[in-house]
Image (cartoon, rainbow, N blue to C red; front, side, top):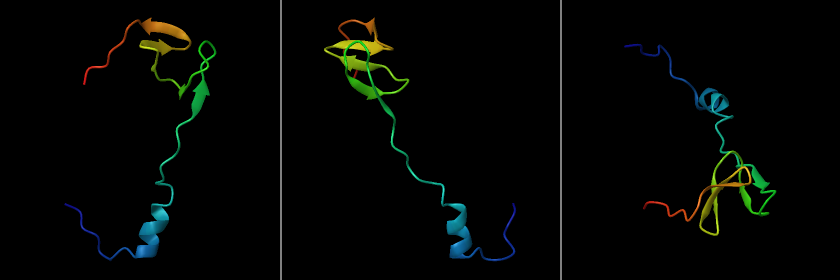
Length: 64
């Protein structure tokens, strides 16, 4: 098992972690329904599961 020879300073540790931030998801508007949704993800509109503007499953009820 590898062990560090020297203590990593807080500054050095934090410099390495600067890019570890949460980014916001990109939203798109459906061309068919006008509904806002997360890109590349299926979404529910009026009980129907939609993807890329077309109905994938009618009367969709998610399992809880």
